[in-house]
Amino acid sequence: ATPTLTPTAAPTAAPTGNPTPEGTDEPTVSPTSSPTKSPVVGPTTDEPTTVPTSSPTDGDTASPTAAPTAPPVTANPTSSPTGEPTPTPTVSPTPQPTTAPLQAWTDFLISETVTTEIIEGTSQYSAARFLQVDGQGLTPIDPTDEEFVRIKQRYALSALYYSTDGNNWISNSDWLNSSVHECDWKYVGCDDEFNNIVDSLPLYDNDLFGDLPSELVELVDLEVFSFYKNSIVGTFPQWLNQLEKLEVIEVGDNDFSGVLPDFSYDTLSVFSAYDNKLDVQPVPSSLGQLTKLRVLELDSNQFTGPIPFESFTKLNGLEVLTLNDNNLTGTIGEHFGDSWTSLETMWLQNNDITGEIPLSIGNLTKMEELGLDDNELSGFIPTEFGSLINMERLSLNGNFLSGDIWSCNFHNMNNLTDLWLQLNFLSGYIPSEWGTLAELDELRLDDNGFNETIPPELGNLPELDVLRLEYNAFTGTIPTTFGTLFDLEDFRIQGNNVTGTMPSQVCDLYDYELGRLEADCLADFDGFVELECDCCTECLCTGLNFDCPFDRRSRRRMGGEEMPAEEEDDEVERRPRRRERGA
Image 1 (cartoon, helix red, strand yellow):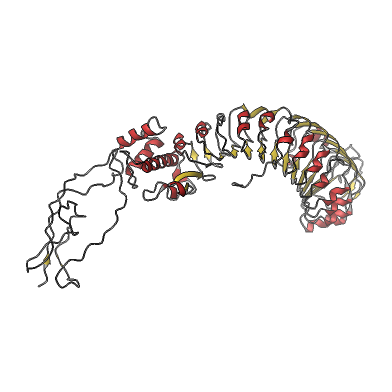
Image 2 (spheres, rainbow, N blue to C red):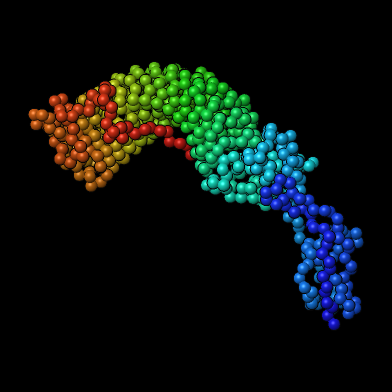
């Protein structure tokens, strides 16, 4: 007869190691007493014999996996005719939540990290609770060296999560997942060669909101700290000065206040803190000690005083410098071009920098983007600009620069796409050699004193989108060659002494990209029209005869009345193109 299996009585003690129920401060630890050893299996009679859940050996005191509650069932014999039971497969145990009380965790964290107190309701408290119920098997009681490092890592990262509203990040995959190693949390980078040590946090543009916890300083091997384009508030983290392996700090486009720390290490190659709310302060001269620095972005803050060019002479590897949109004063260092020969991008616009452009600028032969606009620079444009053959974007507008431009040798800049010289006191003629600038997209010469005729060679610029020549003293007629500028979108010529008729070839450009065409085609009080134009989008009266119904020159050039809204729209804000991260 087939033996009938009868369940044994339920054990008197529950299994140990159950996770803490949510909402309690300390987990409940079950008793450790073991149930009575089960009898050996081996049916030899017709009497029913009990079968334990596993095959224990002598001295085995392990608890059964569960107390059976189902009614008795009939065991089907297996292929073994003698009735020997099939061995239970061995299953590797998964990490269980720690049984250490919360107080043990808080005592440990206060003792071994920068945390000085843990108060309920804070991110530090939430992080401690996470460690208490975490499923990684970590314990604050005599942890091994590896466990010690991992505790600090998971604590710092979970504090960051709770401090910056991690539930609402754009991407937070696997963060605070008890079954996932912290190195596999989204955007957490680790060096696998050194026991999964966190060395990179590229959490930029991820909707972090809140302040950065100081516990991040426990990630002592961090090399990349990238948090730009978020909504992080609070004072600038001074503890960044303690992470001596950092190579990249990117915290731009946030809401940091306070002052910058004095960095005391020399591993940093990228320091980017643009577009914050830093306190009024000079640019720290201590940055000049970061001899490996390649990128320094401090634009759109409240820095004052002169740029410490003399302190920055050691930065001979500097490639990007952006200090625009601050309140900087002083002059551009006379010899700055002698040290920064690696410089590719320099934006200093929208400050109060005075003096002349130094001749040493001709040494910056790698320069691709230079913005000196909207300052108080004066004097001539150096002929040394002709050495900057890699230049792509050059903006000198909104200064007090004067003199002719024919000697500036801009035609050597074969990669030039944007040339902005408007709102200065430049004069003379436009060199016909500019017709060789085949990559030029925008040419702005408006609001100067250029005279003579407009060179027809400008019609050879196949990429030209914007051509603004208004408010100068050009004479003659509009070249018919402009009819080949098929990419032209914006052409303005009003406020000059140009006469005749707008060429039909130019009017035909509406069939392509042209959308804005302005000229002095409005009759004055005597009915005189300076330039006949039936296809212009706007006709003005600002040229030869100043007896006009409407004259914008005086307001635009000399101040007085506020600039009309439609003209404000024309003044496109020049901003640096952000480099590709990691470049």
